[in-house]
Image (cartoon, rainbow, N blue to C red; front, side):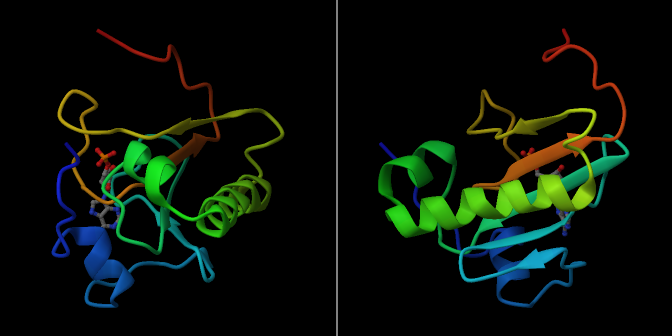
Length: 121
Ligand code: AMP
């Protein structure tokens, strides 16, 4: 069963303007801003505007317009930050086993240097 959306999560608060962020992109469907604890020279978070807990919740219940709008914003950020040239990684941590800290669906866009293996033990 899907975990209920917590409207007090930090990204919901950023979307409501209660917590500041450096807006890199903002449109009807998505907001992008730098991760506060960057794990690579480029580390951008892209979040949908709607209340989705994780990637599966978004993929299963968002409208086609929301899904298209969100992924267009991801593509735009890849182009804008220059990570497309040498490569990049997209990560969507989901749930407890996925190590998700903030329960509002988000994509990490990482790049700017070799990122190493996909998973480390
Ligand atoms: P995850 O583990 O996938 O849920 O990642 C959540 C990410 O959100 C972490 O990389 C945090 O550093 C980042 N984060 C938490 N609070 C903020 C904030 N106020 N502004 C920007 N990034 C944040």
